Length: 304
Image 1: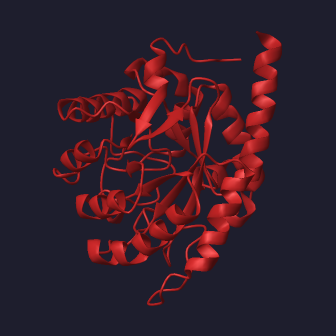
Image 2 (image 1 turned 30 degrees about the vertical axis):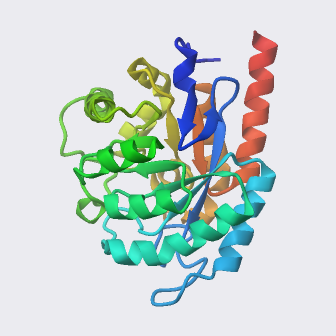
Image 3 (image 1 turned 90 degrees about the horizontal axis):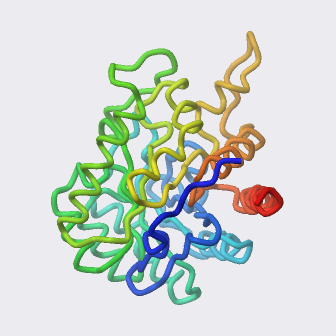
């Protein structure tokens, strides 16, 4: 079983806007709450397009995730699926901030905001968020590093080659010729350098599985996830119900299974990610991820 060499343990104990996230003993589970009408799996779960977010239903879901054992709740107000239409910062704020304020009043669970917009991040941090989950790795909004630094929050820096509306589903080809691990580590190294130039130390990296990669490239990253620890930061894996899983389980002559039929594949992939060194799993199905983590940790203890 692969197990990352933690090296400097302090890099796995993160101060996230005054709350500690300790990844040195075991991986953490990040539960997803998408307050969007169009996310690929759970879009519309808490209100359709044009409707106000149904706060109580979203809160019930988040609290259930926290009770199940999720250490982080990741809140999103804009879909990042390939080809998704962008929304304004004002609309993201309208969707997310009332919910964040309500969740913070009800729970001490760590909260992350899934946004690449500094204006949204600033309001979310003032509302009680601990972590900014930036799919652009600080490459879309030059003001984002300064906002994160001022609030002393944790950051997730993800690799993506373009904004979501410019990405397209791609299963067979890639516009990039450089080997995918080199591409991802070069990008993330730049992101980390920007963060540290601004005095940000609580850094998590995410290879961006499903974002502008071919199916083969996604599985190559999953197999080599532990190599990302060379960057000196904890590693997040966001695999939950993504399309490259559907491609693997598709039966010959049949359509690719939709996200609703990818839970078993997700559990398998999450288990592989943990065995290959993931420090955080970002998931829709917290109970399943908790059980996968328990089995991996039990196996790890038995093999020590």
